[in-house]
Amino acid sequence: MSIHGSEQLTKADVARIEAEIEHRRMVVRPATLKALKEARAMGDLSENFEYYAAKRDNNINNSRIRYLEKILRFATVIEEETDETRVGMNNTVDVWFEEDDIVETYRIVTSIRSDSRKGLISNESPLGAALMGHRVGDRIEVKMENGGSYFVEIRDLKKTGESEDDRIKQY
Image 1 (cartoon, rainbow, N blue to C red):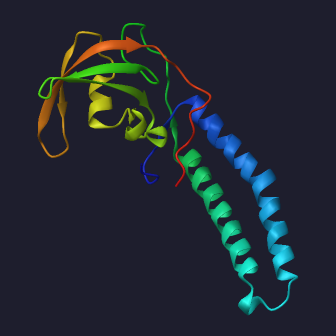
Image 2: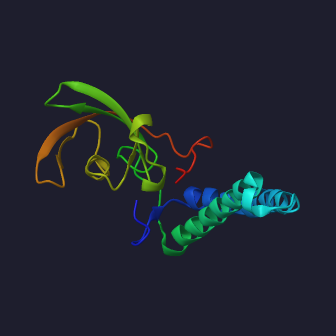
């Protein structure tokens, strides 16, 4: 994911990021500031592990807030809606890999939520981008960044939509 360019986010992604920022400002920040104040009151800061831990936690929280705010500032909000028969955002797709003769299941998500270990692939990845807009039965050439390519076929498509248990990837 690149925060230098425009990050593609769905409205639900934006809402989750805004909720995390709010939580970090209203819950996490007061807790870390309280811990920092209590650790500072313990005396000698040069040998005070609690003070350094509280200071680190506060800095991590503030960095995460700034990071999320930067994502939102440069984000492009994309639509999730697609034709019922075409692959779109948040859809689950069974893909047959021609060369390996295996079927794998993926869900197309924005890059901020991608996690290939969980079957969540970005709409900006070579496979995700190639699948977008296609139908069950389509044979698609997936072009890799290194110039190579491979063929896949869409075997099944489920219009899964947004799920409340999806979480934004922590950095």
